[in-house]
Length: 153
Image 1 (cartoon, rainbow, N blue to C red):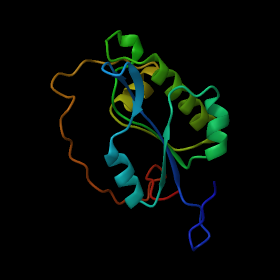
Image 2 (cartoon, rainbow, N blue to C red):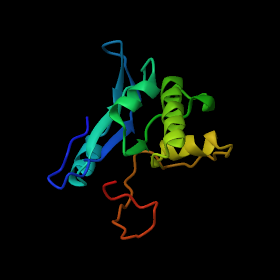
Image 3 (tube, one colour):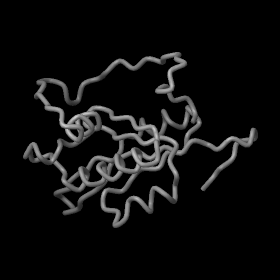
Image 4 (cartoon, rainbow, N blue to C red):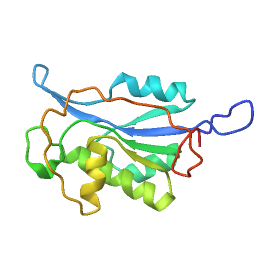
């Protein structure tokens, strides 16, 4: 899956986790991702690959797509919090993504719930914040020479 640009540079492949949605009307469990992620990452020249939450072998799957970046996206609560919106399947998937990123030195970005997962995985403590979910956040472009700044790995 090594797509090439005209400059012979590998097109960045971004693996992104998905929320778990219970569709009660159809009795289905779905993986879901806000369409804005695909639109944003496409403008950055990346190929977006949503990560299914029930992969039997996530490490082999990741070895196949060889992501340039992994994003742990927002949505759902962490399962250990015991809320009705928690997802142990998603926690397991993101644990596999974190392991892969660590073992392969793949850049990893946690957004909202994704950052909460990273904080919890590293022994941090979470504190509830009211009136946060479902709000808009200002996003700005940053020019940086930092190795942590990603612009088409």
